[in-house]
Image 1 (tube, helix red, strand yellow):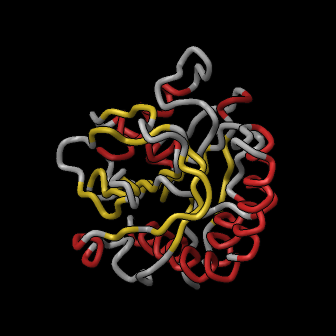
Image 2: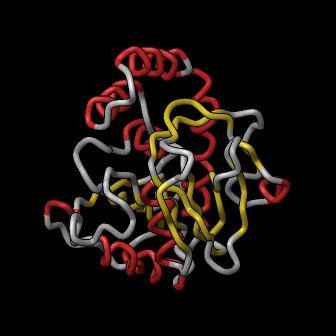
Length: 237
């Protein structure tokens, strides 16, 4: 019987669940445990896991006074990188990884990234263990005010946004992050558009409809990412 790797999903708030990503991980044979440090849950030790996923949230990567559990999450990321545990960060998770491993995050001077944006894979993505087998020409759902301004030493840029912001990176040999949201569906995205409304109600309606209409495209682009991550977790030990 194929091995079922145990993957912990760190979720920072109720409005930011693993959504479609959890479905795909489950379908690929992973055992999942969702950890809510915002509700006081204990974070796992790297040696208890086969993989780690850190999700997004409205807080910033260094907003420790707003989210006092973030230092423990960053420490878990550092220890997971040292232990060569397959680790994947989404949006805030991507930024937390960058900060934990020595990079810098700042508010995007161009303003919020919102809605569907092309994923601009770099040449290094083709040989990457996680991204190398993914289809080109994909789009990703974005909803973020901050971006990684400086990647940690040794990080490899795997994708950049149309304006040059870092979209995806291999931050360490078994640690990846993406600025977009492969996990999101239109219901979750609609909730985010209520929590942090865009400049106009019409923009919100239009963008929510675009995300809903792109469901088949997004599934085709990002389900293979989840499957590949499960495969890497299954090989980790």
